[in-house]
Length: 372
Ligand code: ADP
Ligand code: MG
Picture (tube, rainbow, N blue to C red):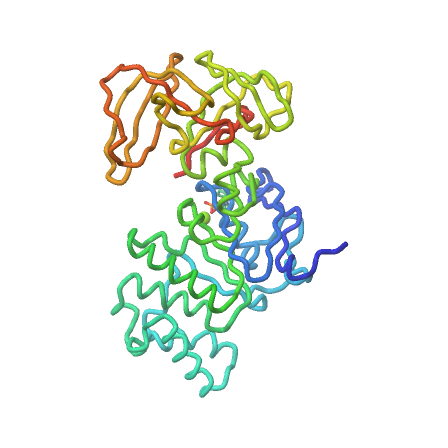
């Protein structure tokens, strides 16, 4: 049965893009977005995120494939007729116009009657809490205020689809967090659909209903933030989203969804199978630092490995421990800073433990790549 149209409000099908007729920077892009969703394209620099947005906005042609909105192909529609709102990192406001004039601009070009424009501009100034700033020029605003105006200008003509390409990249951490809050607030209130681009995984996890993790022009996984974090599809995603210990191992037995694997240090462990096939030779065992613990007496059974203490870093709310396994693999543990966080001397031996359900075995031939 056909999915209801609102489930496929926006659809990319087999979209490919080359700039030089030689290399595909977008290889085979497929994505369904529901009406009102907040979808983020997350990936390292150069992975093709901006190219996808440019094709959606109509500033770049697609080499092949189709993009549809509400079931209608848009790849031949002129950019201004697509009625898409846009916010970019360096989306300059018109410096010679006041804030109110900047906000009025998209309505003026759409030939909205003057009285209605004034009403709409006042409404949006209020929405971004800059009601008293309408007569200022962009140069008289802070970076955060300017970005709020840019956001309002992208939304004021009430587009159903809004694209944002690293819109907070130029702001410092605190302002970035405020703006993340601001954008999600407006998204909830106004109900438009967002395609957001970032290389910042915390930002993606915080804001999105679903995230498409990009690498080398291919979507590695498209899922909700908690699915990406808890159930990564491959070693790239496991390494790119959050932090993971990726320990080289040998796959031994695959039973249903469970993998018995021998780590390079010789210790055998059990893991969820990520994407290994039964006859895989090499694999990677992946465990998050916060899922590992330093074993003291009386704790329930699970995976265990002998390790040597390397260092302990105090980070305030938590403590990071660095250990080494007998083959030289490094393992990081994150634990809450409480009275139970133990002290070690360099080289001291310890037993590390974790449950099979908290770790995954992945194919190792996709080399993990760190984000920026
Ligand atoms: P991202 O936004 O993920 O950093 P881009 O879509 O900007 O990635 O770039 C993907 C690849 O396409 C990069 O290798 C980049 O150099 C190339 N590229 C981007 N824009 C152009 C262009 N206008 N002409 C030629 N190559 C481009
Ligand atoms: Mg980009």
